Length: 234
Ligand SMILES: Nc1ncnc2c1ncn2[C@@H]1O[C@H](COP(=O)(O)OP(=O)(O)OP(=O)(O)O)[C@@H](O)[C@H]1O
Ligand SMILES: [Mg+2]
Image (cartoon, rainbow, N blue to C red; front, side):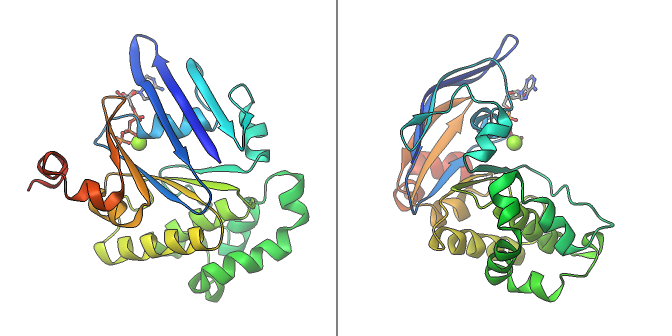
């Protein structure tokens, strides 16, 4: 459904992405992994229309969306949950979620979609009236993802959703990512948690200095000696 071809992004003299191509199909979790500065966030921002100076083509279900403005890309259902939780701490869980219902279609479906989100995230339903700033880090990340789901995405893009979370909560996030995929929303996930992503993703791409260094089925990549040495210290 999402096809990225030959994407290049330049920040001044720095070539942050070079000839990156990848695809996300229906019902898939696609992982983009790589170290600091590899170009992961840049990839998501380029798809979302948040960076200038990019070339290449981005297609959604065969339609070229490369030149659309960021708000139009959101209207097409490509939803980007940025790094960091960015909640409104003095608003409740429910109010934070409702803010995610961008766009005409999502606003019209807000009530029903809130039930869908609480169905996927039952722990949040119990806490709907709690102030977001008093939630644990893991719960706040769940709200950030839930807020993305409020726009009724056709594709959800998550930037390092497990950053700073304890291992047990990291597990919870990956369980949630699979639940979202199984509910019919494909997920493009960017992470430094290489093992977890490769275990969970249907297919993954390894970025190094803005280029795709390796790609394959998550389980196949996990067996690769070069990858294990570079990212897992094995
Ligand atoms: N707005 C910007 N202006 C100039 N250079 C930038 C800008 N944003 C990113 N870069 C550079 O582009 C490269 C890729 O950055 P990016 O944020 O995409 O990496 P990342 O893989 O998300 O890293 P991290 O894991 O640390 O979040 C880095 O060298 C970074 O310094
Ligand atoms: Mg990043």
